[in-house]
Length: 500
Image (cartoon, rainbow, N blue to C red; front, side, top):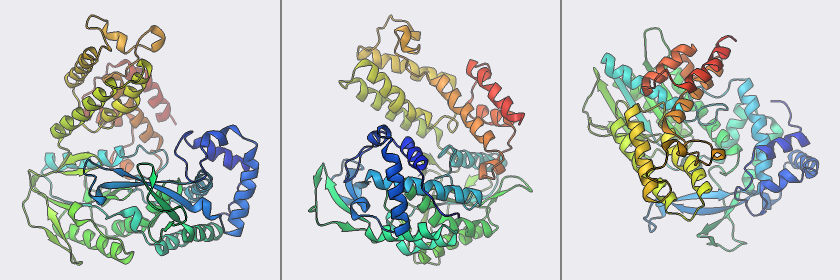
């Protein structure tokens, strides 16, 4: 990795990417002001470079404020709280610059495993692993294949990575020594102040030192965490086990999304080998598996086979799923493949609950529209391309949305239906329709995968990279009609990409 020289342009780019009003840390500074005061970028660049060269940073910038957010209504159980740490804005800008340089180094040397989808730039997030998983499940059921799969969950993954291992992976992957020493010094200063419901639980001078785990809340922590688990991907891929979709094709050994791991094998013995590799690696870096959230599935000739739990080389036992049980992986309930009926009921329940909550609020009409498009619709958008929504189901969703809006006096029962979906400049609500949004999501997913066709990713090896093949696959999965206006408009983009 080349030595890091921080310039004012680096600071300006890091500030530009940051959200305006994201909660600050002890410095109380929002990114909005740094975007406005451009004259301070040169000063920040000089001070960042001095801190990097001197391998030190004031303790103010390495101290966070940890807020405890309840996961559910059980507020008496400490394990039901999710800690969210707000870091100082200056520290986040500096680590954003370092993260960009480290990412460039990793990409240029193809260090990160193609199975890791958690921190890859230009990716589609969880869409890719879910799509690969859906393809494997359909192949197993249709062709009556054998499959052994395991879902692995780490106990407090971000909070349990040893600092010694974090420093070691930077050394293994040839990160610049100045950056390594600087991050090692900052790691020794990491501390936080606990807060609950806006009140501090500890005195201002009694900081809690972080002796293990990654300081979360900045741009560097995700890539650093994925880097710490990257050797596991190398070991799994080197085992030459996995599931092969077709003869002579690529073997899929595992899928990673940050710390969410799913293993694939063609037999129970091969899966046992992959599980032992995972357990041995986790034990060597002193990370624990959350065995209560791990599960194993065995499929024989396309049907779930009942068996007892798996005993590994370590003194742990992993339960085996039966045909009636499901496992929630990346937000989707699945067994051999995704339980679409259950997921649709769950998604629709959340969708209607959010819609009712927004309509009952005191927001203005325009803000309710923004909340619908930005908070309610993403619940459905997450499933587009993964679940097979029929046109009848989408029309029923639209009708119920209009009924709920009418009951809350947001839409007159005799008003034009199109008034909901036209732009606001035509005195309309500009609510996102289900069918156009679904088509947009699918086509943009196709375009994104085509753009990355030259990059060796798991999905580009599992699924062919021709645009027409992509369109057929995605539209077949989603039952979308080819006569859509959006499809005709955006096909030009696919043709342009195919001609390159």
